[in-house]
Image 1 (tube, rainbow, N blue to C red):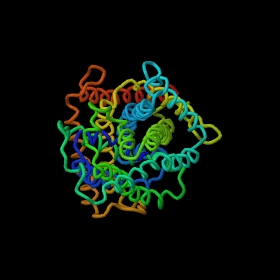
Image 2 (tube, one colour; image 1 turned 120 degrees about the horizontal axis):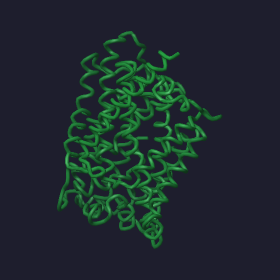
Image 3 (cartoon, rainbow, N blue to C red; image 1 turned 90 degrees about the vertical axis):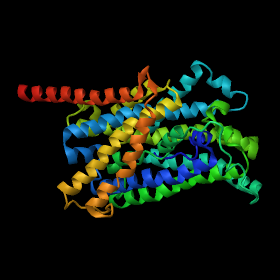
Image 4 (cartoon, one colour; image 1 turned 180 degrees about the horizontal axis):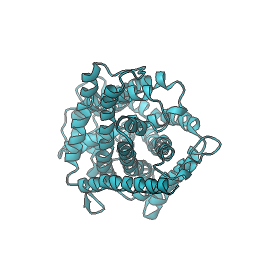
Length: 429
């Protein structure tokens, strides 16, 4: 749910150069991923309920804020989930000879829809099927990068710094930071399936903290190896070489066409492998809200694998609406909406510490109340920066920040309508 390997790092290298990219890959998780994983570790282990972060915010601050948390998360998911079919098609277009033909015109949109439909059918088999397949897919997609790392370091032979110190001609640090944040976000998504996880009190903190370091390592090694092998960072520039999808070109130059093809296929697997577990995560939100009367009861329907199939079909439909947007635009609005929902989770951590001091917490953010408050400072600063960086972006001919504000206002209005309907229903009965 957080990482599908180095795919997606291309825009960081192309916009910042190798040295800055490596610094971002090391620093961002310390300021962004580690604090978030600490927060998720405490809340998921103390309140391991289906619905995850929605339940935490509702319990801490009431139904209104719980609804806003779910609303912002589902709104962000429209843009986040569209990124993975887009990645699938971008890598498919790099298939030798046939790629451009298969993805040109309407065919690209058909492939994106195929990813959405295929993963919806996959999710109908349940959480265990999705989780086990995700591990297998990650091993397959990362295998070509292991070869790339070994060959890149072998070609380097310890002589000089390769292209590590070479700057890019037109750096765009804001885009590089935003893309790096996106590559490290999503830790809270695993919380929504808490009741489908064995021993969540023990396993959530271990999973959060262990995977934070593992993700950083899987990002750092390929970037370092390719830079030391001497491949210019400009090869990853979105203007010069297609941006996302450039790993295939890099692998072809350093290792050869066979590994280049393996990276292309791995990129396609990445699109499916990320979309599939995230679909499992987001589709548990409507069922948790329906249990609270904040969505229609039809969302409570499940199949024999305990999968909320109505929610799966509903979410798949709304995600298909954003498939036509570009990679960069999707990341900008995704970060703004996701960041807003994440801030509510950090606030819930503080409020629950104060309101429920005796709540059993198998894992605690260290430092007492001060530590619980301080852990959200780094993510808050990065979210503020992402909002500032998106100030000139346009979504559907609307400024991205104005668009995000309209989404937030929409959540307030929808809640008011739902609350009014519930009051009238209660008085009528």
